[in-house]
Amino acid sequence: MHFNYPQRFCVAAYRKKTTLLVVSGLSVLILFGLEYSRLEENKISELMKEERDAQVVADALMKSINVKFIETAKRINKDQDVATKIVTELDEERLSKLEQPSRDEIARRRAAETVDNNQFEILETEQQLGIPYVNLDPKNPYIPKKRIVHLDLKGAPPILSYFRKLFPLIKVMGATGVLLEYEDMFPFSGALKNISAKNAFTAYDVSEILKLAEESKLEVIPLVQTFGHVEFALKHSEFSHLREVPGSPQALCPSRASSLNFIREVMDLHPNTKYLHIGCDEVFQMGECDVCRLEMHENLFLKHVKTVADIVHARYPHVRVIVWDDMLRHISQQAMLEINIGNLVEPMVWVYAEDIYRFVQPTVWDKYADVFKTAWTASAFKGAFGETLYVPNAKRHLENNLRWLDVMATQASAFKQGLMGIVITGWQRYDHFSVLCELLPASIPSLALNLITVTYGYFNSSLKEKFLSALSCPMQNMAYGSPFISLDADPFLWDKLSRCMFPGNSFFRLTNRLHNLETEAREYLDITKRQKGWMTSYNVRHNYSLPLRVDELTSDLPRIYHGMVMIARSAVDAMVDVFDNYTISEWIEQRIYPYIIELEQIQNQSIALKSVNHWPARPLPPLRDLQRLGVTLN
Image 1 (spheres, helix red, strand yellow):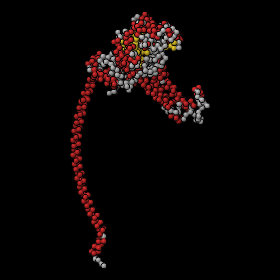
Image 2 (tube, rainbow, N blue to C red):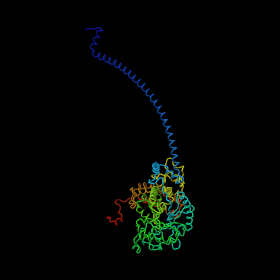
Image 3 (cartoon, rainbow, N blue to C red):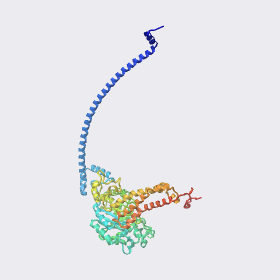
Image 4 (tube, rainbow, N blue to C red):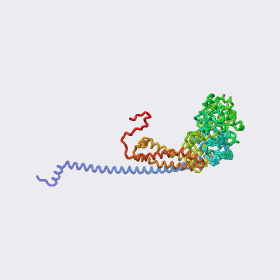
C-alpha cells in the first residue's frame, strides 16, 4: 500500500505520538519557566529598589544623629575642660595651703578645718606616700622639746670634715643636739690609754667636734658605758680582772669601784655638758662572781647606778645623769623608791620596734611616773632591724617614730616635769664584736624622714619641700603625678632619693648597686652550687663532672665577678670623704670580699673539673670522713 507525503507525515506522527507529547510538554514547561523567571526578576528589582530607598533614609537619619552626637560631645568636652580647670585651681589653692612656714601656722590651719575633712585628707596623703597610719591628733601634734641624734662612733667614726657637713644638716632638719657614744674612739690617757682604738679621735678632734656642734647650736651629750657593753675595755688583759664573768668581757663587776675611772676623762673633755649618759643597758651577766652572787640582781643594779651617779654629782654637781631603762623595767617600784633612784638619774626608755607598749607596758609607765620626775625616750633611724644590713628600712623606722609620738603624747602628762625629749638612735654595731651594720651616709634619708617627723609631730605631703630641700633633692626632676616618696614600694628610698646631693649620697647610691649585684650573685651561687647537679660539693670533692655542663654553669661567672671587683673599687671612692681607710677596708671586707672569694673558688673548681679526660667506673670511692658519723664504708 502506497501513501502520499501528507499521509506519511500523519502516519509518522501517529507512530511518534509519545515523543511529540513529551516535546510539547517540555516546550510548555520551558515557556512557563521563562515567564516565572521574568516575574521573579521584577520582584527582586522592586525589593532591591525598596532596600536602596530604605538605606538612603537610614543614612540620612544616621548622618543627622552623628551631627547631633558630635555637637553634644564637643559641648561635653568643653564643659569637662572647664571643670578640669576649676579642679586644678582648687588643687593649687589646697596645695598652697599645705605650704608650711611654721608649726604654729599649720596648727592654726588644721584647727580651722573640720576634723573629719582634715583626717580624710591626711589619711589619703599618707596612703599615697606609704606612711604607716598612727592615730595622732591632727590639730595638736606632740613635738618633743629636745630632739637628739645619736651618733654611735664605735668602729666607723666619720672624719672631721664630715661632721662639718652633718651638723648643719641635722640642725636644718630640726635636731637640738647630739648624743655622742665614743666607746673606744675616745682618746683615753694614762693607765687607760690602751682602751683607745688605734684610729681613735685625738683630744683636738673632740674639741673640734664640740666646736662644730656649738656653731650649729647643737647640745652635746656624751655617753660612756659603765656596766654592760664594756667590751671595749674589758677585752684587754690589764682590765680583765674587772669582769663579772672571767671568760666574758660583756659586763663589769659592780663590786669593783676602780671600774669607774674612765668617767672622769670623758667629763674632762666635755666640761660644759649638762648631761652625762652612763649607759647601763643589757647587763646580761650580773650577780655571777663570788662577791655579787650573794645579792639580788635588782639590788646590785640599783646600787651600781647609785654609785656612778653619786660620783658624777659629787664631781660635777651641774650635770644630770641619764641611764637606759631596760634593766629598770622589771625592778619593783618599792626598791627604786627605797634607794631614791628618782633623784639620781633620768631613765631613757628605748624601743626600736613598732609596738612600743609590747615592750614597755602601761603599768611600767605608771611606775616610772611615780619614781621619776621626768624621762626620755629613744627611737631609731638605723641599726635596729638586722646586724648585717647596710641600708635601713625607712618605713619601719618611720612607724617606730610615729608610734613614739603617740606614746609620748599620752604619757607626758603623767610625769611631774613631762618628758625631756627623744633620742633618735643610729647604732653602728650591735656590740663591740659585731660587724658593721648600716653606715651613717647610707642612712641619711632615713634620718631626715624621722627627724623631720619628730620635729613637726607628724609627716605628710605638707613637709615635702622641707624634706627634699634638706636632702638637696632636685625638685624639678620629681615625676609629675608621682609621690615624692613611696615607702610601700621603696622602703629604702633608693628609687626616689638617688639623685639627691646630701653628704654621703654617693655611698647611698652604691648600696643600691650592691643590693642588685648581691641579689644576682646569691642567685648564681645557689644555682651553681646547690640547684644544678654538676658543680656541687660532691662533684668538686670527687673531681667528677661533665665539662660541657661546667662551661654552661660558668658562662655568667666573669660578668658577675667583674661587677663585684668594680663595686669594691667604687666603694673606696664613695667612702673616702666620710671615713678613714680602716673603716673603708673593713666594710669592703665584710660586704663584698666574701662574694669575690666564692666566685674565685668556683672559677678554680671549674678549671679542675674540666681538666679531667677520663673518669672511673661507678661506684665512686666512699668518703672516708663518713666513718666518724657511723657510716659503714664496706
